[in-house]
Length: 427
Image 1 (cartoon, rainbow, N blue to C red):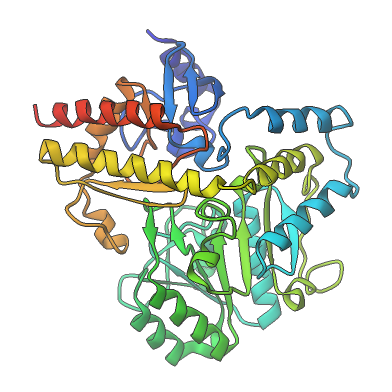
Image 2 (image 1 turned 135 degrees about the vertical axis):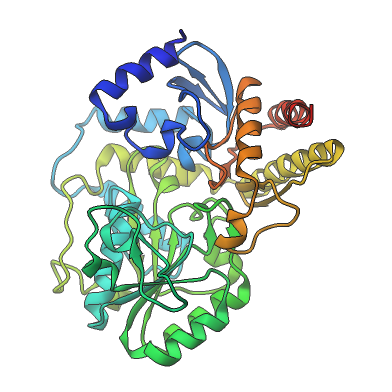
């Protein structure tokens, strides 16, 4: 029995499912999770000492590579001065100023500790600012595990959502309406009927939790027009895409200015930092200035902020995003070429340092199309790649991530492994 097997069996005795976040359990793909012992650059090593090329990068934060010496140095220096104070630090100001500089739609920002907390708080603020209850989200977009966001589409078109988790009261779900991603006509219809009831529209402009899926410009432009017309808050959830697809996030690629933005992952550099921010008139409705309450003992934690600030400085260096995008494109082009050689129904896409792979003939444009991808074929491919030392997301419906340390040699090794994996699928 491997050390991974032993650790997983042990973990299941004290932790539900043996993991502290469900996707880690490999339930979607089968098999035993890999327990990470250490990581460096583009690689990690598991409990058995096996090396893997890592394409999840802590689900996005490791954009400069694992254990970057500057980030580790910043964390060590901050930790030496104390771990947490429950009082303000200059580091929080520096982080807020940096975010406002890099994302111009954000005039003021509040730091928190997780993407779930950021999205939940931002939606509370939108409801408090508008005096309305109804929130629109889109099928397949994920905004954390707050009750009102664990909602799927209702049984009929344009119906209110149904809870996707036990423990979520129907009374919470009824305040969330779930629409189809990339369907601007549906948005027009809903706002035409209910515009004066809608507090906010929340969207991943580049979705990463139903695999990688880009919003169309028309979809986001329609959203912006309708929110402006009806006084609703347009909220971009850029927990994944922020500082991942471009320095200014997805909103800089589309040229659309949201009223509020939710950030996470990269801004913590691997430690728990998230944020929500936007127009100053909205943000000033938060306590202690306004009536919308939000608080957090570890918000703006000095050690976490140090890791995040170090990362934000590195990604602003010349040509950082050009190189990152080039390597990600090399990866998806190489995987696609290997699939064509094998006669595989396969396609791939990339935006900045995010990518998606799909066992389908054409790129999906919404949740329903994504669900038609061949999940079982992906699972077999996943395990063949894992055996070859390449660690992809353990689900057919999650985006992948490339870091600045994924050089040509790493990409070439990955593509070579893929050739072998595709050959196994057709053996």
